Length: 178
Image (cartoon, rainbow, N blue to C red; front, side, top):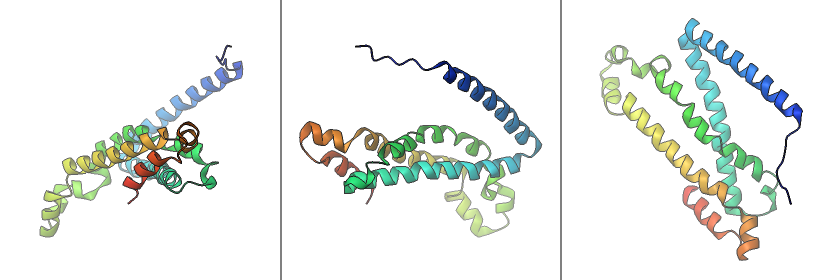
């Protein structure tokens, strides 16, 4: 039996239109960076936080559904899994925030922070670019570590295959939802 799927020709037309829209949007973004970089990075941060919040919130709901079980999450499980699969993309899209940190965060301006001795101490220990990058890497590592198994463990499949009610999913999600 042949299980290969061939998309209709209309799909190629949508892909071509999507590429054109993407290229025009990219040019528009580059013009925004060149015209007012500070405003661009502030706007980018807001959009980035919104979409990262959707992905991380979906991860929390997915793990909660694995942990509690029940039929309430069966309908939303696949969209939640799809949303959590955008976390690697969010990691990649975090790079402009690292590059534009001087324009986004006041604590990266050492001259301004030097006016207040309390801020000098905080920026030396906690609010600095290397430690900010390290914290972000650790947080993304935790999110990616939890999203992989939460997507691979399907309680329905586990129940059918092993006769158990998704104990692996519950144990994994319980570890990270504490």
